[in-house]
Image (cartoon, rainbow, N blue to C red; front, side, top):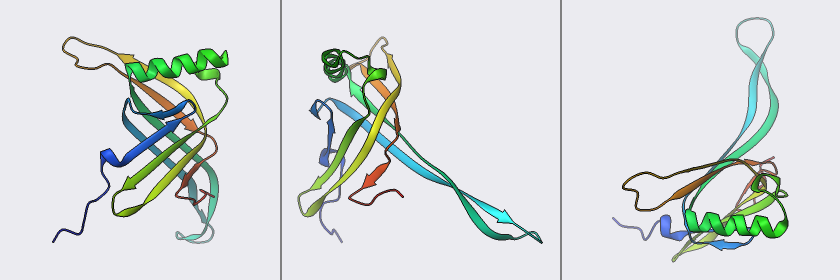
Length: 143
């Protein structure tokens, strides 16, 4: 039984500081909270302790989209690594479902990877990100 269209790649929109991007091929992001068992007498945990929250991500841009980002950084008078923390908005819009939006707050670029090889049909640039302000999933704060 088919229950309608599900979210797919074509339903994702990504907005960087300079506007909506169309030249991207991948976006991924994850977060986590350190939780460790706390032991007392015996071998079973008596409770748990909570540590640090962290979030990170990656976005893969086509070379011409990367060039747009570099131009944006040049206009700011900064390198990609020295840009102020920026927000990335990721929206999932499906024809028969409400739009869902994840907001990656206070992103900083920590690594840029670029390569090209014989036979490549397109050139890609990957940015690794630290997401300092957390991932807000459809309005739900991470902490």
